[in-house]
Image (cartoon, rainbow over all chains, first blue to last red; front, side):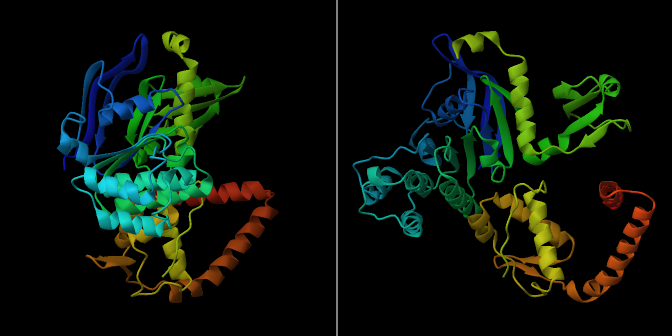
Length: 295
Length: 129
């Protein structure tokens, strides 16, 4: 397996005059659970569809597992994809889905599929259209992992699930990657969904990648500073201000870089959710007018 | 065998929560030398976290000499924390209580005492780390 699971350079996707993804340059390491976070309409689905080959780029390049997405049957077999809302064939039974999977996937793992269906207590004779949302998501995940992909791509897998189904889905996903060496890219508009499961994060806002990196590195590199306004105005160079708010006396900032040694500045650790929110609000503070019109 | 539980609102990273829960279980005598820790797969299938988080916690415990990984079998506790450290708890608690009394006499309110303790504790921990 290559050490890079996805590599994009200047990747751009336009639909007519609307730019869904702009100049995306990204390298995602293998063996990680990558969280793709951003508000609705930020371009997450577009990026994932480019990665699995459902869309072709308007400009730029993208390589997945070292190859062009959907280049041939072998490449298709190595990538598992669950689209948003976990589509299944409503008229087919759970058993039909497994048989379909077995026929269409060269690396199909029947034992893994049957074991999961049993553990989930899905009735093989049940029509997929009558499953609950959580069961449907679990069935779609079963099909995607039983093809034993090197990369699993999940578009908003838990967005429509209730908290219990959400937990069960992530438990199943984590159990799979604990046993098999697969990389995962999953998207969500909620950081809290991903916080525990991701070890790499990409924040996408207004069709641009705002920040990307290993979660531990990102947390170590960012700080929240609380300081008197005067002290906040004289921060050392090299400190990138992500978000700031001021009262007449005090400033609160989220910064990237080494924390200043100024004793007047209180330096706090920042959680992943607040870190992402800082980047999201940075996007809101400097809107790209063209995108605002088209959205 | 113990089970882990994670508090999403504690502000403590999941990996550290696992480390602390193992240490705590060892201090309380729930885990002693020879006991097996839950497998990574069992942990992630229960608490839905990234397997690397569990591995990182187990590596940290290994680094501290509390557990050892046996290839293909699992991770086992190699030390017992209970005896000497439990005995030391009570005198330490008394000293701390006396310190808190002195802080009150010096005019510090509850929040100031807590802040002083936490900041001193943190800076000492950071120095020794």
